[in-house]
Length: 244
Image (cartoon, rainbow, N blue to C red; front, top):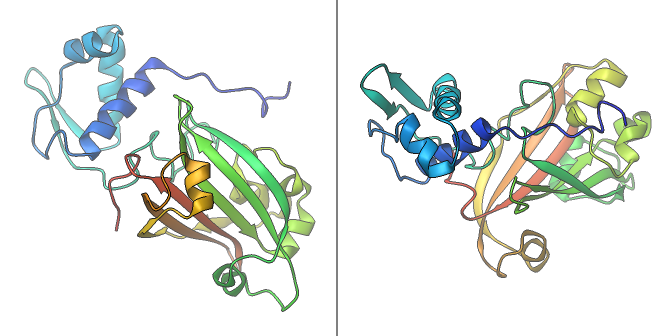
């Protein structure tokens, strides 16, 4: 088993931090409201007070709460990004695409005509097929929290063999482009909109047809301004709070 194939452990402190962050995101605690103490969290989530304290520090480091020694912790901001496993839009600190507890399942890696918007963003010639990586993301309970497809520029698709394999890439498409093609690549802030699940999306997410969903579209661009990836992801209600 290679280091890339080895699963990262899920730590209780991360689970407690994520559970509290989700509660803050959905409005259980307003800005300035006091959150449960480490002892209260320990009793609620069945962990040691030290573990609960570590979870509070994680949220403090992210700016979600403010720890006031001797006076408890309060909400510093309401996270308006997706309320799922911590900061899914960022890579975790160890360089992996998803934080501990979140698993990606590649459904297919194929050539595809692609969305009209994807074709326009990637600036491909008429008749060219795009690379397409269709996938699900599950949280630590096994619930599907993302159904998505990444469309990849044909030149990048042809140059990076691992994109064409139906298995997760630990550092994602951005990481693969940097490693293989030596092209620094960044993701633009996602464009978000509310919508209703199509029949296909509903089946993948395990929700009712026409259920509310959050749709995110993200374009990844290299240092020369060339778009290398266009991603559309759909998230079920209850896993998101909104977003600009």
